[in-house]
Image 1 (cartoon, rainbow, N blue to C red):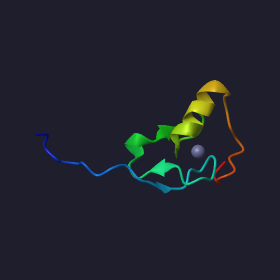
Image 2: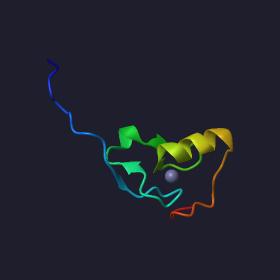
Image 3: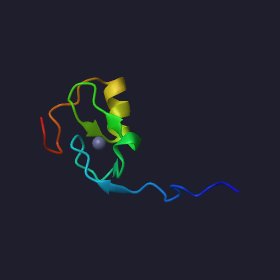
Length: 63
Ligand SMILES: [Zn+2]
């Protein structure tokens, strides 16, 4: 038996400032951090940044 300290599944309930989609996890530790802006973005945008580079202008808002 594993101890159920934090066993609740991750929920995407926040809007990514980059893509504007509700793809951000509740906890920032589970999201990606932009390489270009001091902000957290969704994992998919984090991958895109790694592949493509700066994704700005962000459709989701900031920058
Ligand atoms: Zn995103």
